[in-house]
Image 1 (cartoon, rainbow, N blue to C red):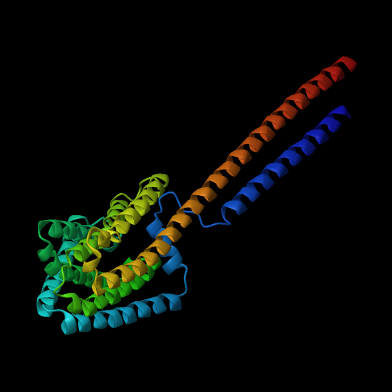
Image 2: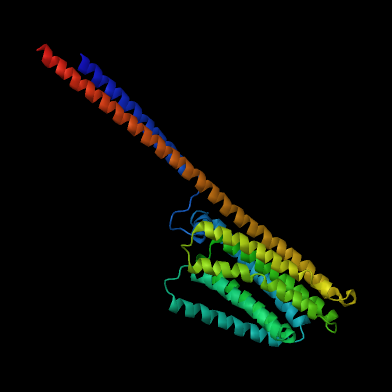
Length: 352
């Protein structure tokens, strides 16, 4: 009878602890599957691709592509009309812009040959060429402000046209948020710079060096973000916490860099202020607001994911601790029942 009682007690304890461990494991699995988590080898680009393309409905993807095409046609037509109507060297700008466009395609094909294993090559080349464009802005202005005044429009239009064409012809290579942001950004940039060309004839004879200094500072502020995203594309396995800190620093540096452009009118007497200056400042603020909105949204997303991962890691450590305690208790029960069983058997032998 003692042996039967001990065996029943062991089975009950064993069932109790196994049931508790299974419940803890199921709760952990349900919690880990409740939120969108990045896999160990995934990148932000891959996650955005899954959210924007793999998981979204086909109609939404088609609507985004149609929106990109309509914005491209509308903004490019407006920009070209402004160029040929108001710019004094329209054909010079137009020809040089297509030369820049050809250089961008040659660079992209060269990267495809030299680095065939590079993932999201089109995205990486977009950021790398943008970084190179902003560096050229700075070098041209430092070398000669008058040369920058003649060349910057061709650099701007040629590079932006390259991005438009790539998004329209190879949309599968660009994740959804990339196409959404740059559709809005590039269309806005074409309308903004087109408005500068409309206003510039009235201020053509003025001393506009301080305005072009503000323009080169304002345009080249994107060199920080382009450099970081180029690094992310080349080194996709960089620690996410490091990238998040770098992204925060880049956001602050870009804002400081761009804010310097708005103080350039203070470097000259008020008599030199003109209509072009106010148009450049006003439209620049609008584009800055757009950039800040998307960048803050991206930063908040990264910090939310980091917080969620830390919470799940903490839950996992608590679960492991509870499992270890349960196993130890189970071993203790097994030892106790084993001793009791041996004692019972010895009593039976003595009775015999």
